[in-house]
Amino acid sequence: MNKEIIFNFIKRNTLQIIISAGFLIAAILVIVPLFSAESVYVGLDQVAIRNSPNRTAKKVGSLDQYQKVTVVSKSNDWYRVRFDDTKTGWIPSWITNRTFKKGQKETPLAESKIVLDPGHGGVDSGALAINQKHQEKNIRCGPRKPSNKL
Image (cartoon, rainbow, N blue to C red; front, top):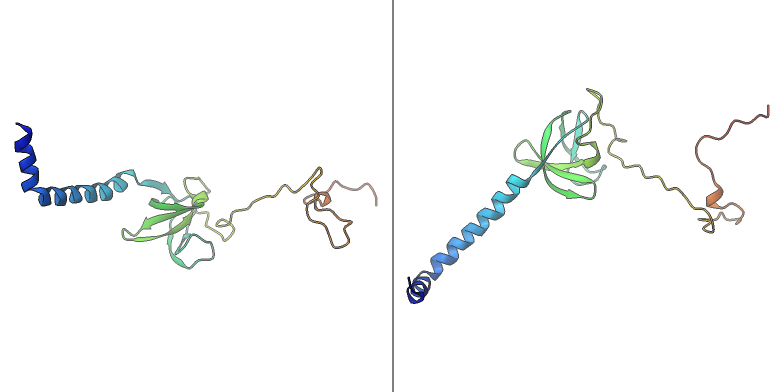
């Protein structure tokens, strides 16, 4: 084939080529996420599915322990998952793909992320009290050593 025949073919069929390319691109955009979707299982029983990635958001469903769901998207540490074939909602990522006792139900604390702030020290005093005598770095939390005094 010479170049002139190919050029004339493209010139006569430009619209059909553009439409075909558009359908091909659309098919790829739909099919690729289906095959690359991540699946996770839920570790706790009766996990609340929320309408947004927040533990105080409205509950739109629940999942059973060890139920497998498809992750549609991620936001911070929350997964937007597909459930009941057509519905989607949000669950905390930290309760997925983990093994808990059989029948252990989700609690509000399970949906919370607990962050420990080690505080301040050294030259960084942290926050000061109104009287400026009590530095945050000197405030102790947790168990104290037992006193020998009675």
